[in-house]
Length: 108
Image (cartoon, rainbow, N blue to C red; front, side):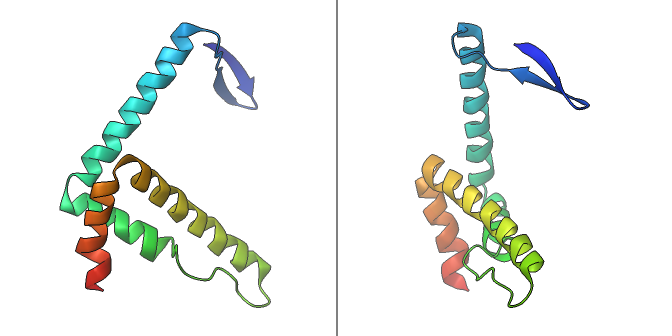
């Protein structure tokens, strides 16, 4: 991969016509999938993710703060992180996702 500078940060330029770049991207995706599997395989990991999604990111809460656009934006940014995490879990590990809900959500 070619390295280019963006400000003070070096970034790799991905070339989808290069089989080595494609393979490296596929390997990285598989590695990330294994990370999710590892975290979701343990009750402690499922509990931590549940707390992150629904408590810290307040995924199902209203983001709007009347008369305070900055707080609304902040809340919506946090909520969007929770939405992304939940989406990854639902796609990658649907059975473990449901188990996480059974262990945490339905006991509230």
